[in-house]
Image (cartoon, rainbow, N blue to C red):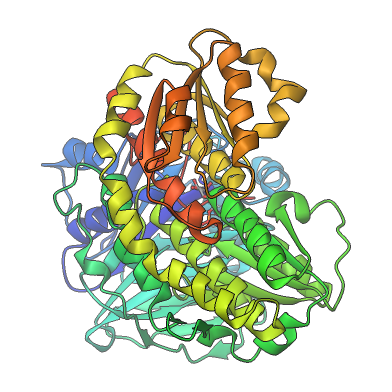
Length: 621
Ligand code: G6P
């Protein structure tokens, strides 16, 4: 199998397709980058080029080759099954070479279909499920003498699983057929349909048009330059007039802005992005919060018996912070679950539950599946997403956008702090509705939140200390991250950052839990990063934990509150952060951990924005 989590692009129009495809693929490389390919049509034969490696590599290899053609498709891949190779790279062609397609998703009944096709004489040259679909389109088309688009439709009726596909045919050199089920697909329109762009994410063609139409689940569309843009249901063929919307965000202007990496830029952007997440929502004078997207639901949410967060990866840690804040300040019972566990463990969901999905991309397949399960069980489902118009934003009953702006670095930073900001706002809004805090206390917390961007700014000044810590531990192969209370999820997130981009094995642990097992691993020189700011209720306990680690000769990196010389004196290295209330502490304490991970990765020579084996948005389960 293969071709499962990826970026796809397509172009139909009057211009040369290849530069548009290369640009689109480059913009989408965050979705996958282990192989890339394009296929160009527009005449009697399809030309295709596909290689293991990056989009840049593809561009270099094909320069000087025949790249003309005003219709084309492209793909950048992230392999989960089927190793990255030229053969497994997309596009895939049908046996007779007349059909080429790119695919994002998984075809679950690929084996059954390939056995059937093998009996009919089809030969498979790749290990991918996608090749099965290419052959199947050819097969059903020939067998029933179907038109190109009808053959695609019929083949898709027969496949099980998920897909976003773009298909071209040398027999219909002016036509592209696209379809989706479970994977995102957006069509861009320019000059009232003289040009069409296709992609997994509107970011791919942002410089060409901001007018887009999202295909809905189980829809297929036929794109032909200068012709009507027609959308219909894959099964049954019911037609729908596509709704064309203008995307607001100026996606066209994303650059590194002088930073070496997107991740670095995104870390340093956080004072602004956290402010953007609060903008228009928090009134620091009255302590009131308004989350417009939840207006119709706040009353009921405040009365909920239970809130269940579902999320993956970094978003999961943000959700754990949401749990701590909402339970403590608003007094509503909260549970947090990994979406991938929630959906398969037969959870008890009641109609009175509020399930809140937290996701940067809004496309994470496990989170989407958890949403579907929650909906089937009758719960109200809300979303906290960064990407406007994403699948999760559309699949939920209502929600809040985090407004962090596009995050390109694979390891999430500014999206995490934006999620935590929104969750803190939600905790305050619920506290206000439920009268769980005095007016004075609520105002004080609102003020604390309002001051966070400035405190992040100050914390970013520790970059040199963080870099020097990263240098000193550049050879370490293991690290611990410890915290208690709100600092525990931060420790988990800090460890995840280090794992993701510098490939150092790191464990995030509740500091108090170390003595129940993991302390056995602490020996001479093992770095132990301890979150020990003095606002935390458990500060004294954390100090004892530091002593326990020191006694085993662990090397202590302490994150302490400015001026706390006593705690600093226990550590081998310290990073000082500004004084902050526990309500907002996570937003500040996470900053040095992001910086330490970032510098560790660059010092170790790792590709920070494109870490091995990871992808920004995981649209496979
Ligand atoms: C992937 C990314 C992680 C991210 C997780 C959840 O695994 O590599 O950085 O935290 O997906 O993504 P989401 O878009 O749902 O927040």
